Image (cartoon, rainbow over all chains, first blue to last red; front, side, top):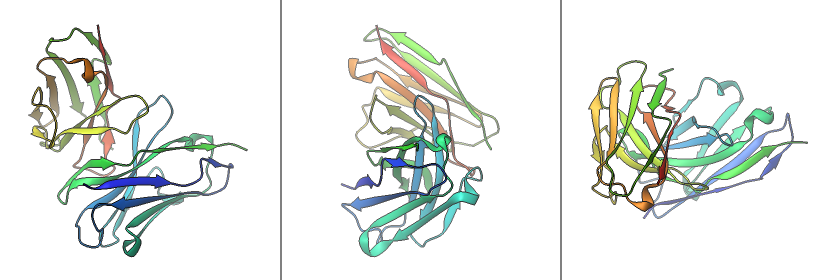
Length: 121
Length: 107
């Protein structure tokens, strides 16, 4: 059973870079042909897809975040990472990582547990 | 971006009731639609993908239908554990977008 675990700081200062890592267990990212996404949820609000990286390293980012965003993959460690630069209070959210349900469908299962990142000085 | 809307925004129903939630896309998305259930403090859980395909392990009282721009999630007989917020998501066009959610309460 595939499981995803998010890790990273829960507090980031304004203008700094938010960095999170998602560790995948129960399957090797090197053998699978899925898409690995980051999704966030502002407190009390809806869900926003941030971007994804494929097993081969192809990325697609939400244009609303594109200029500040970098998603990378480290297959040997079964991890993928998010870096969001120049953060503001508007980036305060619960951040989730998730896998595509199949190699051909861009909906998400399973999800990691999520981590609250607060942007504050 | 494709905009997703949902109705109603909230519903309160009794155990055993049939509950339907509607999702509408701002442009046609064929059947590239998913439904999720989210409980407080938890990650969303995929229920339905490809508009009507049930995710493994999801109770059969959940079903999805629709194509193009209009979709429906139906809970045939509401159970106490079905409380939470339900979201739809289009999976055809970047960036992938979610509906605003429908909160389901048990009376």
